[in-house]
Length: 276
Image 1 (cartoon, helix red, strand yellow):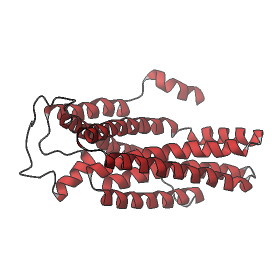
Image 2: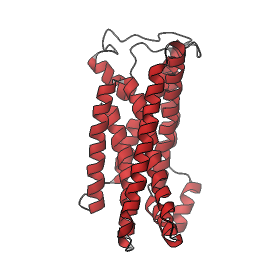
Image 3: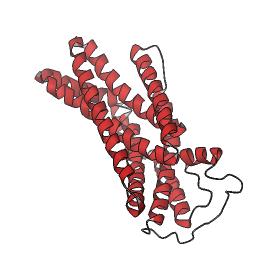
Image 4: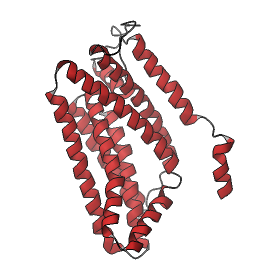
């Protein structure tokens, strides 16, 4: 529940920010009559996301044995890759996402193409939706379908409320701090997804375990207990991981975590100094 709620809160808030920025710019430029076009693009994006998510769950449900293990392992690796890309993309775009979106909306308005505006919203929101469908599948495999659904609904509700309050200007949320904190949690989630995917590939005899069980803490916290399931869903906890699972988990956190939090280089700071 915690993971699906976090994913939906983060992804939902990103989508809400995109929609809010576009609506606010349309209102500011006297194009409030185009609001319906924005909601049309958003609705189509949500519909596409539901179709993609349903397809993923149905496909997984029809597979058994090694095919299921390969599908789930691939889905876990894909989700971790997309999640990592999303974290770095938002860190980079959070600085100028408003200017970027306003420029694209302005281009669509100048050409008089409502279709271009629909496509802009559809692509921007649809990307968040497809990512969410993939992450919810991974979260459901780490927990249960019921808890993942409940957590996802709560996260969505929180994102809608925060998005509306930000749009109305009644709530000052430090977005940089919000995305940094959630990025830390999502990096832990992504490392757990990689370890989980590695485990599935072990079972499919695609990746050797080298050492099957490096340690066994199931006597203390069993990974199928309530606490163990929560730790598994949030941090990828495994009571008796293989050596390869441990190496994959630790390597991802060390490498990606260092890249994310390392101080910017002089070359990276140069464009910002030029703007100042």
